[in-house]
Image (cartoon, rainbow, N blue to C red):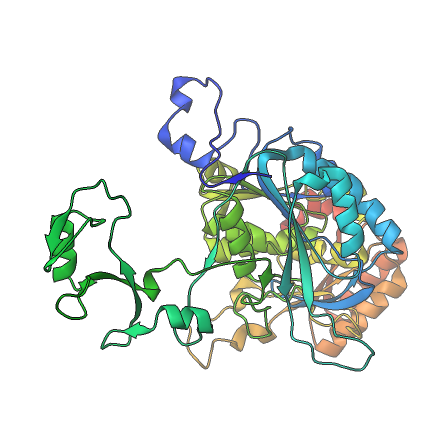
Length: 512
């Protein structure tokens, strides 16, 4: 399939003149779709809302068919969770991904690129599926990214230490900006070292190239006593000579041009990527998401297959690495993820790392973003996985979810009152307020009962808390009676909050 460098320009329809300002063109590449949006939901449902051929670049890193369980630490909340990343079988995984990839192909522009990130467990089956959907002729590359360094050798065979990224085109002339890897002067291959064998006094490497023009019909002139048909005009030759770029090794020899190693594009990057290390435990960008990819990986993909202001889509965006990279590189973007927790983590990441405000008016001006379709109805909240529901409730109360989910003694989160914050900040007081907090317990039940309240009371007494919050869809009469008895006998307060209270913003009044 042919490719070309340069921008695939979009065309706006005939809009009213007041809407055709330069700032609109700089921040809104399409009149058909909105960008800088994170959609919460199944991408199959969300993609149906997008028109055909509206996306310039798609990158997806869906859950692999790997039969692995991860322990997941969200840095936004300090919450440890089990993260299951498996399907019943490879056939089930492909059956799940096929309709979603069909929709992704539909929304991709003819000039667009599609990247599918997977690992060895199902990569061969994914390739067959993508050939069927996109067509074998649209296959561009199979990229191998070395994601880790093999450590354990407790099994027969070679350790698996790489991911596979399949690249497909949309069927037309692709947007393509060839990436290069800069030469490392201290670690050159033998061929490059031989080419750039000369050095300046400061150690700067260069090679000497010919300045003779191969076209004999061009005008000759004499330079440094040598008459030739030169590539450059006399004035340029003289200026380059005075700058030390044109050199004559000895009188009578043909002058040549210095080409410095550090001025070259570098080595063209091929399909074996070993220069981008995986995130380690100390990486500043690390959020604790088990399959989080480094920004450098998405930076390379987005630069190679899109131009400024193009629209980038990540339909399984997890913790939002592709969105952050797209924002940094001046692209438009759309993210989709089924997990409300992931969407909140993305929102915090966009606020903290990109300086964007979560505001729709600012989004339209190119300075903000929004998260849409979060499950703010009782019916949708009932269908959430238990840990997602707990996250929603605790964060909705302005709390922090508990870092320990096993043997947490009935505490799912904590609220740190603003009044507990120190008036001044110094090394001794910075964390002094951390012992002032209220426990939160969450039960995803139609009605929390007396035994649930007993458990929470024991947790409050153990932690010596005088006030706590209990969230459920409703409470039995026995639970409410026990809450009143607990206050009467101990003066400790349990504030019962229903999901309806939270959705109706009645928290402040009930919590007072």
